Image (cartoon, rainbow over all chains, first blue to last red; front, side, top):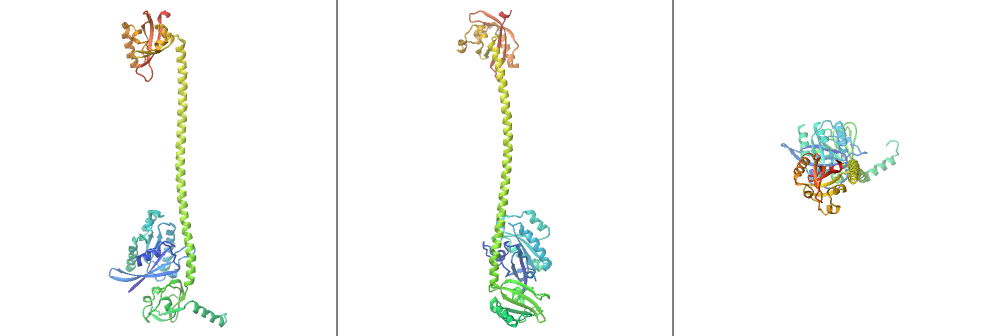
Length: 165
Length: 292
């Protein structure tokens, strides 16, 4: 079966692990557990008539000290940039990571996920900031790992984009 | 190992072997697994098949191989068994080597530190947010206070102006009343207040003297217009009333009052409606007998 490596990228505590858990296992926990290194999960999907395995690399988030390690990105067919809607600075981190990822793996497909719509009343991102992303041609989803909102769509869209390449 | 005695090298190898569960894979340049060994089962890597694509058997190697010339390091890869492995990849003529060393203990230690650091960072971000919200609330409150203070100052200023105006009017009224009182009390002319319904409500001494009534009689309401006015000249009163209603005051005219003793008193009479009233008048009467 075809296998495609997808990397979950973003600042720390934006919900990368929660999104993978929601997508792969349909579970969610409110408790925050930081990721060290990388954890790899597998999810079988069908795109068109094609069955494939998505290998989801949940990579530890960036913070002031830890930067994205390029070796984790090697061989990625695509990536998901995760932003925490309640923390404006995580969007800036996402911009920086996207540049870094592009240098490492080239122009592979990616989608932006603005997570935590369940906390939308605490959001620090306004429509203007989000529209800027879409205006630059990026595919953006507003998701909630807690409720599952748009999580599946985000992963499937990326899978479709990968298969179009 | 260069510069190290063989005893040290052997000890180090034994140390790694005893404490870090080394395991390896050798992958041919076409991506197929050609050889493996060591403690792979510790990492949950089992049921390997020779000459089959390695990415289908060891998922974290999907897309990683073949390597460039430089070695690669993947720290803390969480394996299927739950252990974390440091994964080293390097190339030789035989193919791409994958070396796994147990890093679980190091990963746990690192996770504990990182968890605290991230929790602290999130706490700081939360505090900053709370601080910003408090500052915003404070700014809004200050703006409201400033607006209200301004409105209050404006209202105070307006009130002060109104008070000053009222004091000025009261002073003017007091002055006017004093002047009028002086005229009335001087008794140079007769002055009285006439209610058009027919009652004389107030009068000075000069007027009472003209018509022969006492102040007690006046206060008892015993001085009526009909009693002191000759019926033959009543039409002049009616004309004066019309003039007052039209212009506020009548043109002074000669009139005759009937004295209490029945005698006739010729006089010059003028009247004006009190301000804001349709019935109350102030009148003057000049005794013509004394002035002819």
